[in-house]
Image 1: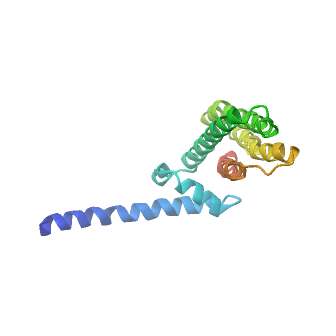
Image 2 (image 1 turned 90 degrees about the vertical axis):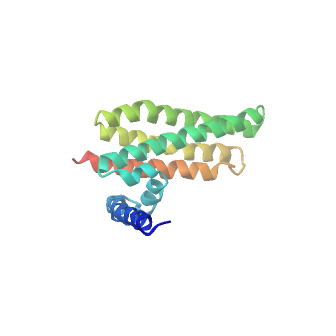
Image 3 (image 1 turned 180 degrees about the vertical axis):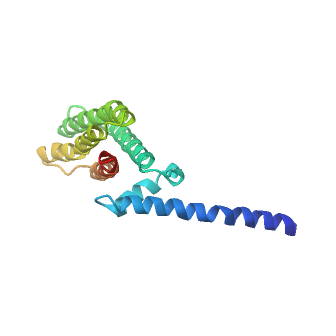
Length: 175
């Protein structure tokens, strides 16, 4: 590699560093305004698009999309497990979980997204708060049959992602 080419590569690398730090700083500053700053940062950093945004609105939109995606993913996982456990107490608990996640997914994907896009931030936050209850409903379904839930990890992920999204959307309510 020639010296000139090396300098061009180095210049390109260094020219992007301040922007990356500025984006991380924006996410950090915004997340400090939420109830759980560390969780907020962790959730947003999982989505590379969040590093490109410069408004709270765009971060909240990404967080809402993350919540929708986890609801859809968890519903699909639970649906597969429920099919394999039909006719058993665990199958009944999984069907209760599936119902909770399908409801959460539909609420977020249809009403939550359209509400957010229509600037009904209070309504979107309320839907997110309700959707994060899907994980609790699932855990309670397994408690009802006296078994430990095999879905605790994904239930926690649902609760965390909906909480982060609700916190970020709440920052828009006051504007």
